Image (cartoon, rainbow, N blue to C red; front, side, top):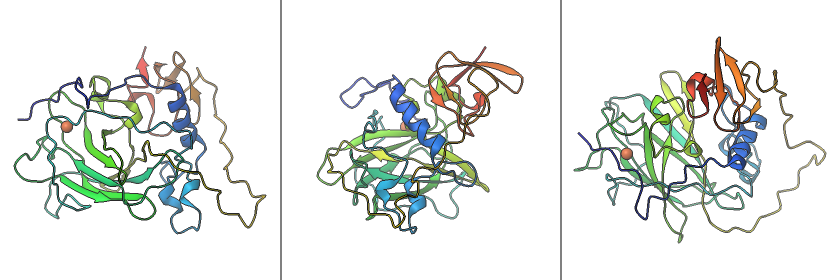
Length: 293
Ligand SMILES: [Fe+2]
């Protein structure tokens, strides 16, 4: 039985539990204004692949975005993982999960050939410390994109559900961090958990699809977006106005501030962190955002 990871205290344990209002608002703004996928997910840069649009125009990254935060690597990292994008075989037990996204620099430009080294627990919450099961590294493609095929990791004592990852742009320092799942009851009790590392996860049939874009602290020179053939065409989709004001019944698209109160399914909740609500973040699903009162 694996031991719980210790809350970060060492040099790699740079945990900042504060949720920057700016960060949340920016992330939320993306969620609130980006073109929505079928199923209500966030339109990430990958959705533009093949459309002729420049990846740099993705609404999932802004040129003043804070870099992805660092977290402890925990006790189960092993170097020299295999080069592979799939950690499963046809017989691997567990709910299939695809994690995909982009790696960006500070100017929101995608980073090609960035290293991503993933490791996680199996369906029973155990790490393979002998072999390399559920361990693998890969590199972003020319568009800065990555895709990992795996399973939803199991829980183990002391932690909420998470995936470990190290991300490194060519010739740059390694970022060690973790990715989290929305709606997990333990998110509210895990001292390492940080809402800034929440994936956007949606159900697709019997599988789940998670998305997350990393922003590395890599200087970049912003480039001018390619000239559009229709320069007068708005590039920002219209914002869907909230259907109810803050403090009333919960509604996706609404900006809530800490302390706001809403009702949902007949229950009252108090907002713990400023955010713009999205489908999937209904109060009962996100105890990090809403406390029942
Ligand atoms: Fe872990």
